[in-house]
Length: 250
Image 1: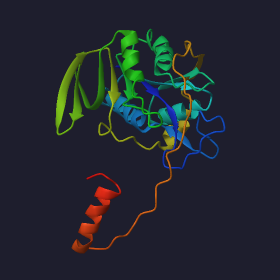
Image 2 (image 1 turned 180 degrees about the vertical axis):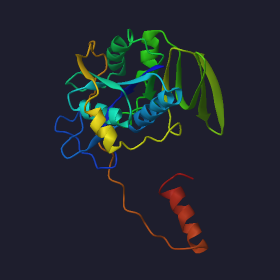
Image 3 (image 1 turned 120 degrees about the vertical axis):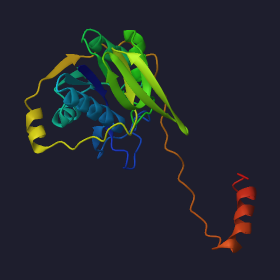
């Protein structure tokens, strides 16, 4: 099975962010970057498919400047077979433009399955995978937590609020991966060394004119200091009063 996994390099979300002087991007000074969490699940799921079949190939693709090569090498150190960097030195917030560039690379690749994370953990748009499916004319199933195959049919599970869906579709298809499907493995030293020798193709991204732009970014206001009103049942009446009269949530 020939699988493509599309990756995004994102900042570590556990650090405190600053807005860049332009007011339209994050100040990257001192930030660490890694593969988006949901993309990591997709890479692991794709590798497990080829390992289970003892056949096939996983290609990881990312759009961005040369810094994305670190993310692509990490995916290959996990077990992906080859990588493609769609070189683009700008910063795009237009999911349609990004999807168009990815679809241009994917359309002639002969992939049985194209995988995305459910969303990137920085912008959380969650749109690129579905747009790529539409551009390629392929079926798309989003946020899947389990994936099996019966010949050329993919059988998937989607978690809902208190329930789940079982979905089938014919291959080739595009899927977006939710957490729970697979826990990304840590790259081994052998894998890291092997990744240095695996092919990484660099191609110019065919990004169309963007129709979506970012006007401004702002951090949320600082949270007000907490208030201790007492302990135990005696504090309940005052807590209720504050929730009604100050917070106005009751």
